[in-house]
Length: 278
Image 1 (tube, rainbow, N blue to C red):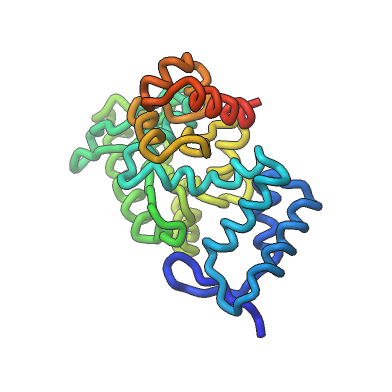
Image 2: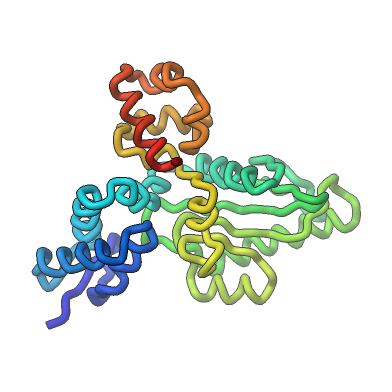
């Protein structure tokens, strides 16, 4: 009988060896190590119904032994989930990523539309053109941004762009984007493609997706560091220390004061950060 995986939302899907191996390879695991871990998962989790979180934990355990830096990268999605419970930190994180790619950014700005005012999560500007980013942050892996979200963003953008085109605002808006830390439904993607709404999501699009923009410039969130407790991660995020790069630009003593930690712990988390950023 085929094994089944039970996901966080209670839904089930067939156990897929290739899917497990692909997730390891995406994190940077060597082909042989990914194959080794996939076989360990298959052989050690023998129940007909396996919880997705048990697969994740077992794979992470072996990654820590075989390739420690990759093990940290493997937790990227979980690290972003720790931005919660609101989407405020995620908005700042998206702005931070855009800044590293040469955009000037503003967050939480009220913008005049033709009919009404709108609060825009992130405004990104490059070459005198402005882009509207609406950030949809989810606390569950299984929660997807649906077509209603895409419709809502596009409708707001049309009102803002009409004001922009008629010089009723100081912004020159040319495109809207949906940025999310999980996935989008098929209908949301279909609608976005039809109306020209950009999407940056987990594993979407195939190439320049959220992971790509993070990995390409090593913009890992500080919440990815395994040596930090949740409250310490929150302290750093609350002080706008969003990425590993941000942290490495600050003196260890100051980081220690932010998180209430002594030199031994601070030195360890800096070693973890340098391992990722080197």
